Length: 156
Image (cartoon, rainbow, N blue to C red; front, side, top):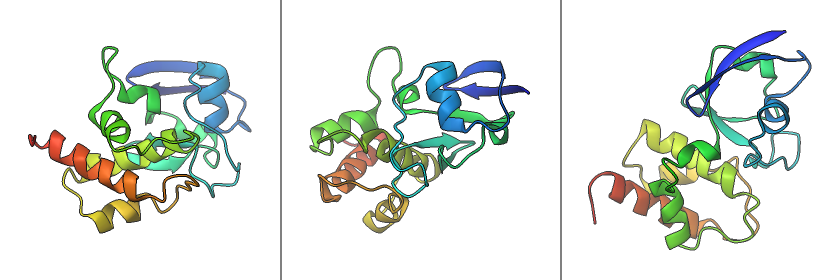
C-alpha cells in the first residue's frame, strides 16, 4: 500500500505492508533508530513520537494511520547539527542516565512544549505519565523541561 507522510520535515512515499507498525517503518524502512522499542504494548513510552503535534506510542500505531500525517522523531529535535534546547536541558539537568527512555521522554515533553510553552510542574508530570524511567526518579526530567521552557521563552 502506497503511503505518503512527512517525517522530520522530509516527505516520504513508501510501499508499506498494511500490517506494519509505525515504529517499524520509522526504524526499518526510513532508518531512524532513535525511536526505541521497549514493551511493544504501549506501556513504557520508549517509542513515543509526535504525530500531528500529539505524542503517540509508535508501537501501537499502524503505519497506515500515519498516512498524510506529520511525524517528528527524536532525530527531528536537532537542527543544523545542533541539539535542540530541550535536549540541552536534559543534559544540563542530568535527566539522561541509561538513555533507554530518553528519546520517548523527549518526545512527550516536546509535544507538551508545542502546545504549552510555559507548563507547570503538574502539567509536565501529566505529559510524561506514559513514559517509564527506572533511573532518574523523574525529578531531573521535570527540572529539564522547566529549564527548557524558561530558555525557549527568552529567559537566561
